[in-house]
Length: 132
Image 1 (spheres, helix red, strand yellow):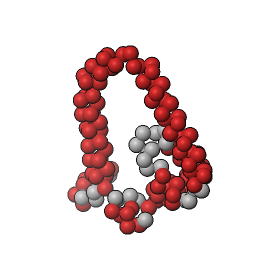
Image 2 (cartoon, rainbow, N blue to C red):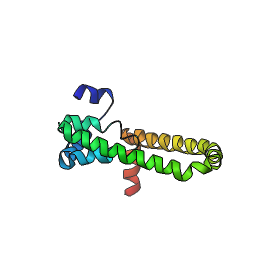
Image 3 (cartoon, rainbow, N blue to C red):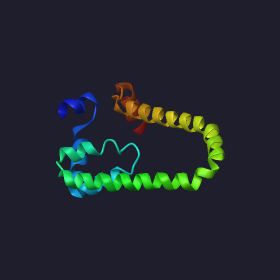
Image 4 (cartoon, one colour):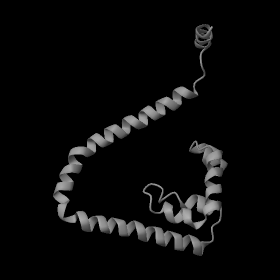
């Protein structure tokens, strides 16, 4: 696990935190995770790490996937007659959403990269002189 964590640049503290949550909530975290897009595919990893029994895991996966599919079917039923309006809306606004998302990710990565850099000596001296 340590090798994969280093390969994907995941801090071991995060893995321990996820394992603790999985131990605390058990199969419930699997069920809720199956309803959240993006988390759906990854929720099995911590469940396997803490060795949730297969029957509990299977039941939680089934219930979570059932809820997810029911929500999608319901959305399709309610919005199905307006597919042309929705399609036009998506075609118009999706590029903007992608651009804003990419800019937010770039800003986040830039902020965290700059925060990890050491402060140069001349800046520390300037701050010290400014405070005096």
